[in-house]
Each structure stands twice: as C-alpha cells, then as structure tokens.
Image (cartoon, rainbow, N blue to C red; front, side, top):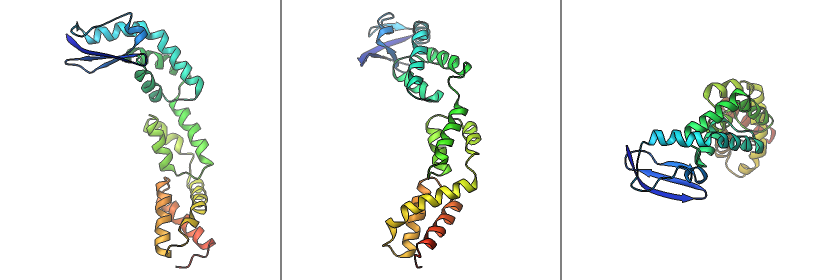
Length: 209
C-alpha cells in the first residue's frame, strides 16, 4: 500500500503524489468520482485500474479529437493523453483501438513525412531526427527514408547550398567552404552530398580558392 502525500489540481488535472511510488496525473472529472486525500492508504495499481475503467470512453474520444486536428504518431498521442490526466491503461486501450482501425499508423505517418520533405532542401539525417522525436520506431523510419535516394539528396543539398552560399561570400575561400559545409551538415545532409553540393555551387559562383 502507498500513502497519498499531496494532491494538486491545475488546469483540470489532479496530480497525486505518493510516498513510495511515482506521482499520478488524473483528470479532475474522473478524480472527483474516485477521490483521494492526503494520508489515504491506497493500492496504486488498483486505483489506476479503477480510474482507467472510468476513462476508457473519454480517452478514446480525446484521441479521436486530437487526430481531427492533425495526423499524429502513437507516441505523440500517448504523451498528450497522459499529460492531460488519462492513465496509462486507458491510453493504451484507446491507442490499440485506433491502431486496429487504421486511424493511427506510424509507418504511414513516416512515409507521408518523407514525401513532404522530399521536395524540400532537407537532409535525410534531419528527417530521421524529426521522426524519432515524434516517436516513430527506427524500423518504420528507415523503411520510409528509403524514398530519399542519393540522387534526391544530392539535388536537395545543392538547392540548400545555393540558398546559403552568399552568406559566406565575403569570407576567405577556405573558411567560406567550411562554413557552408557545416551549414549543410546541420541541415542533415550526409558528407558525400555536402561535398558534391559545395563543389557545384562554388564552381557556379566562381569562388576562387
């Protein structure tokens, strides 16, 4: 059994602290149905299950509403719902239901993200970082990133270099080349694509070594 040590309510979410277990966020609507008070002895796991039973319908509706606004990965929805006071079992049940119905699909999400970025001057490593930040698995990310082949990345790097090169035009050639290369690398391009792009735009600008 755990002892409730503190309860704070902020923006419709009750944060329940325990003496020997992680704190728990519960939507105030459901906390009012299953209230606790400081000093209460409670089986935390049992309490979470009781809250989850009260939240299952609402958690699913909240997830659907989030998807109405924009496409999201499973991990994004999970973070959002937990922060809003839905407990893990209710969140997992809602997300499993959405996955089974095809309403969330991280592989498809990654493929769409890659398609959008294919037309931009963005490197494959930057796209990979964005997908990981969204909670897309390495397997799903790599499968989608296969669409960004060497030719596409070479062209994207060249476009990016053309947009950046004038920033360094007043620098000595060696320093300007290094700065341009570093800027492209920060945009997520592989060094082979960087080198090829830098060579191309410096030749076009007749930047003397």
